[in-house]
Image 1: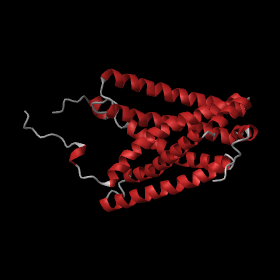
Image 2: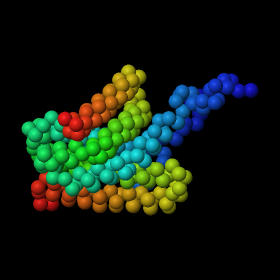
Image 3: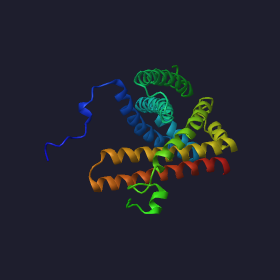
Length: 130
Length: 125
């Protein structure tokens, strides 16, 4: 029985950066799901009235909250961009190794650039010089 | 000779009993979220976030409210499907898995209801 072949585990594959992009898709999805709950909390504050909204906005302007917001922003943007990549794959296109590597690199660049743009606008919305 | 019943063959759901429903809805919600999130983020960036009155006035408009409700509903659905797969793949204890899968449904359903209620209150009250 012990001589029977095992199905391959993660450790037997040669590492390629496209693997980490795939894992990152799940991780950013989970982080974005937590970010969604924060967004709902913000909506509830807005619906509760001016005092609750001011409290929420004050809490969101702390340095730690801002750091978290940047993290949520990156997670969302990455998941959005890589999600498009996955939807294209679902149509059967772009699955060749070279294509998948190229689209992976494009997603990383796009996610970083879009995060930077969103943070820039976010700083303006919070009344901060970027 | 197949042991499958004719009904089972027609339904095509396999041994898990649910077929491709999860996979398909994940894609449907993903496609819907592309324009919805893009619209919301771009519109939100044009608003003065610090002003309660401005935010309330913006979210309370009929079209903004309707699209926002579609957004939070679809987001909650998509997040529920995604987190469900992560729990199914990485949590191995039978009790822990069942508990987390239940919690996943409750949290996302509650979030969707809270968000929709908030938007309706801003739009109607």
